[in-house]
Image (cartoon, rainbow, N blue to C red; front, top):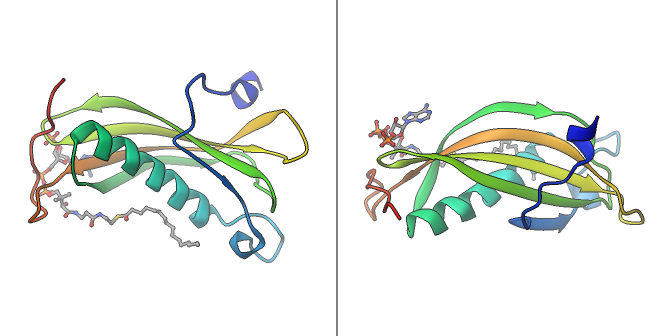
Amino acid sequence: MEALTLRPATEPVIRVTAMPADANAYGDIFGGWLLCQMDMGAGLLAARHSRGRAVTIAMDGVQFLKPVKVGDEVSVYGEIRKVGRSSMTIAIEAWRRDRFQHEAQKVTEAVFTFVAVDDAGRPRPVVQE
Ligand SMILES: CCCCCCCCCCCCCCCC(=O)SCCNC(=O)CCNC(=O)[C@H](O)C(C)(C)COP(=O)(O)OP(=O)(O)OC[C@H]1O[C@@H](n2cnc3c(N)ncnc32)[C@H](O)[C@@H]1OP(=O)(O)O
């Protein structure tokens, strides 16, 4: 249970409120909307790390652990796990917090792979720091 309540120590890459338009017929937030937030968060990390354009090539290991409700604060955390020649493997977690409470819970996790591309959309080497 601790793994679902011990928030990452880093700053979130994205923080947003889940709105009614993002919900399904049961009042829970669409998983697709959450994945979009996660992809955007991973995209920010990939673009910053590679100092340029980077696109999603794969999304693995998606797990929806808990539902998100309308009005929840959703925070996306990410960490670059591996850098290849042109690819970056990024672990992403989404956390929810009831807007009236302090505690947060991990709701979704996935591993995104981004590829740094040039202006023509061809893979380019990631600058190694
Ligand atoms: C409001 C509610 C709406 C709800 C609605 C529902 C929606 C619910 C879903 C939302 C989810 C959001 C997720 C959106 C995610 C996009 O938006 S996906 C669309 C955007 N992405 C694209 O358009 C990219 C399309 N792909 C490409 O253009 C080409 O594949 C690329 C990226 C240029 C790569 O070209 P390539 O010739 O395959 O390159 P190649 O040299 O073979 O490989 C490049 C590197 O990738 C690695 N690689 C290749 N394949 C893989 C793989 N499968 N896995 C890992 N690494 C790989 C290689 O190992 C290589 O790594 P390095 O050794 O260089 O480090």
